[in-house]
Structures are given as C-alpha cells and as structure tokens.
Amino acid sequence: MKTIVERFQQNKNKIANAIFYAALLIELFIMMFGHSAFEIPYRGRITHVAFVLFGCKVLLTRYTKKEWVVIILLGVVGVISYLAIDDEWVIRIIMMVIASKDISLKNVAKYVFWISLAGTVCIMLLSFAGIGGQLVDMRDYGRGEIETRWCLGFSHANNVHGTIWYVVSLGLFVYLQKTKWYHYLVLTIGNIGIYMLTLSRGGLIVVQLVIIAALIYRYYPKIAEWQWIYYAGALTTIVCSGLGIYAVAFGVYGNKWLERLSTLLTGRLEMLTWWESLEYWTLFGDGRDRKPTDVGYITLVAEYGYVILALYLLCIFLLIRYEYRNKKWMEFVLLMTCVFYTFMESTYTINVYLLCNFTFLLLIGTWNHLLMKGRHDESVQPEI
Image (cartoon, rainbow, N blue to C red):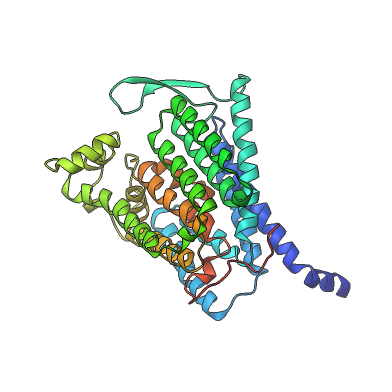
C-alpha cells in the first residue's frame, strides 16, 4: 500500500495531466459531433463525465491562497447561474478553466488542432460518401430569397466556415514559425473557395483577418509591440458588445448608420428589436423561452444575465492586457477574431460546446496569471 501511495505521489502531475486531456477529448468529441448532422445520445451525461474529470484534475492540483479566493468566487457565480436558470454552461466553463493550471496552452492548442482537423475531414468525407450530413442545403438564409449553400456534412453552412476559421487559426498559432509566404496565398485562395460554397461573409472575414495578421507578424514581429493595437482591440470589444445592447435599448429605425449596418449584417440588429427587450434581462438570467439571435453578446446577457456578460468581457480585457505585456500576438489575434465572430455568429461561439470559443481556450493555463503584474509565461510545462 505504501508503495502504491509513493508511486502515485511521484506520478501525480502526469496522472493529473492525463485526466485533464481525457476531459478535453470528451469536450472535443461533443464539439465535432455537434457541428455535424449526427445526434449525440446522452450528450448531457457525457458533459457530466468531462466535468467530473476536470474536477479530479482540480483535486490533484496545488493552488495558492489568492487562486483559491478566485476559485471560490467563480464557484459561487457558477452555482448561482446554475440555480437561476438550470443551465450548466457557466459552471462547466469555470471548472475547465480552473482545472487548467500548470497545463501548457501551446500543447492544448496542438491537441485541439489535430483532433479538430481530423474531425472536420471526417465530417466532409462522410458527407461525400453519402452516409453523413447533406452536402448542399437550400433555404432562406435571411437575405430574402432561397439560396443554395454547401454544408459539406455540417449542420449549417456557416458552421463550415466557422470550423475553417477555428482550424486555420489554431494551425497558424501553433506552427507559425514553420510557415512560408506561399502558405498564406494558398490559405487565402482556399478561404475564397470555401466562401463561394458557404456564402458566409462573417466566416470569410475572420479567416482572412487571421491569415493577414499572421503573415504580418511572421515577417514583421515588432508589430506585437504596438500598444495602440491592443487598445484598439479593447475598443473593438466594447463596440461589438455594445452595439447589440444599444439596438435593443433604442432600436435601429431612424438611425441611418445602424440601419445600414443591420442590412450588411443580414438584419441581425433589426431582429434584436423584434425579440429582445431590456425588461427581460436580469442579473443571472431567468430561463425564459426566447427566439435565438445571431448577436452572441445579446444571447449571453439574455440567457445568462448581466453578471455573466460582465465576467465574460472582463476575461477578454484581462487577456488583452496579458497578451500585450507578454507580446503574445497570435493569441491576441485569435481573441479579437473571436470577439468579432461572437458578434456575428451567436450559435457558434456561445453554445454548449465550450472549446468553440477562443476566449475560454485562451484562458487554459493562463487564468491564474491574468491578475499578476509584469510578464508571465502561461505554464510551467515545456511545449511539445
């Protein structure tokens, strides 16, 4: 018995890491199947398994007193959110992020990249083989006419381009130093080609932003030192989150700029005035039935309340500060494209699949450093 305990103590970190990656694999499994046309049986129970595994990682991790204060506060918020609306999303995010202490973000990004790439290819191949989801979908996508878009086995054409953004972003983040100029040309041509199939303007924009930003940094790394860009990122976050709230509070009619913007966004801002009202919103949500909207920040405040929206935005601002101080350009780029995409596609980044949202992914291994002063690496683990 003593030998078993000694071996466990010697290998505790390896065991804890293995548990974390097992939980992460479950979340990835849920995410990839959720994008496809296949239904996942007992999905709620599967998320509970991941939650328990993350909890086991927490029990095997050493935290400082300051970290325990943060953990307790976040735990209280998560429990209140669950009790208020009977929804586990917030507390699942909190458990995953807290469990990620001493985990390397770069290692996680590689892990997520390869599994997501494999899952994406499988979904498309199964569709072409006729045993997966449909290749093409014909419907009114909100532009006033019936359109034909390629779904390639995914549940929606926009999810195709959203997943391309996800995979391309992670690939460039992990393997940036191995890229050459022609890789960016190929990625641009591919992005345009995918757009011709999906007609997803939001997807086209965020993918191309990542490609351009990575190309600039690859050949001019000093751009990571430009402080004004990070301030611009914070301002962009405020604008993207505030536009929807303003539209709900004051409407878009009579404001030519907002009317024009709503038209460019396929009526997204106008539809907010149909289905949402400030009187519905509370501190922690109320669990009411609501029409889904495409503006993710409105989905967040309407379903989960002001407190969760404020906490979400606080995490973004803290990440921006951390990325500036540590000159983590690609992390900043991923975060900013997620900020924009959350404004465009609520159902992709604000949903049951935790890892779709780069904000939560970027908190892995970094959350306990966000309130510290000066420069800090996100993990004690070496990259592999």
